Length: 430
Image: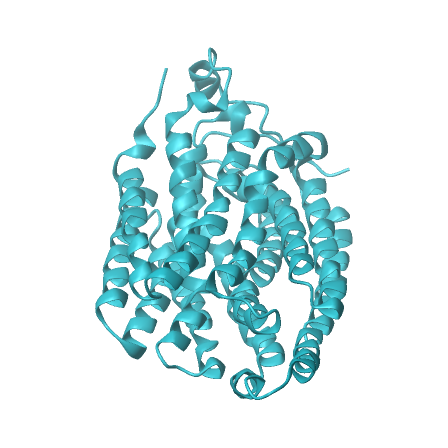
């Protein structure tokens, strides 16, 4: 049986140095997995738009189906983790993602968009469990003041995988896509259906490989030496402050943090998942446009590295968040008021602005929750539903107005995150 460790006041690691390092390595591998799976969506959106003959709004249902699972399954994931603990919960999450990957096979064989969306929802459900377990775990396993640094290290694992994912899947499923789209307009219905069936089948082998890897990782995680963390025990100061609290909603800083994270995930998903389609609308060929998601993720990795170097030695978590929110406004306005490559690269640079938002928002929002940590973490994970709703709104605005002007919706999102970083995280009730 794995060791059980109890959260300590900031400044003390939860486990011996060897356990701490090993735990970081194991969780890093999990962050790599859900980074890879998540950022495949940036390719699936234009791919399924062609294969299933969709408009912009319909194609962004890919992001909706995937991220809405975080809202629907957030509370059930908290119940699951209360029964299983963090370690077993991570294994369960991996198994659920594998089932979602498996659903892509019949979806591709029948070219049924609804079945693709179901597979994405199941994958999102597995990631909800995985994230609800791994994010608070990595926040709690070491000193509180350096939580953003640890999450930044996890973010590098996540985004390295994410930068590789669109390149790998895009080279398989979008190869020759521009030529195919041009030829489709000259085909009769039977020829078009046959060509689109062939295109749909391209996704089968990649998702079979993904499913196999997930199954192996689920088994390895279950039998790993990952120590369990007992968040039901509180240190004396936190316990005294929380004596009369009966609900997680009695923590205003958490509620504001959940909404901030909702907006952050929405703009992060928009930056990564819309940039390929936006580049195409700016006249950039699809084969070249697929690179911009990778640029977005490289920018995030650069931000994570800066966070690791500067937090907490030179910058506090909240100050880093303030800087990132301000950069989000600047890069969004640049994308709106420029054209071509400069405009598209401005969207990619939002990766830098977004990089330290999750690492800072999460620990600031769950600070001092004590026995409410699992439920508070699950509420934050539910905030990932911003990735379902905001890109869908963007897709609607892109159809009604145009893809460039639709980015105006990002500006108030970044301004609210700036408010949380400056004042919202301090709000407490007795």
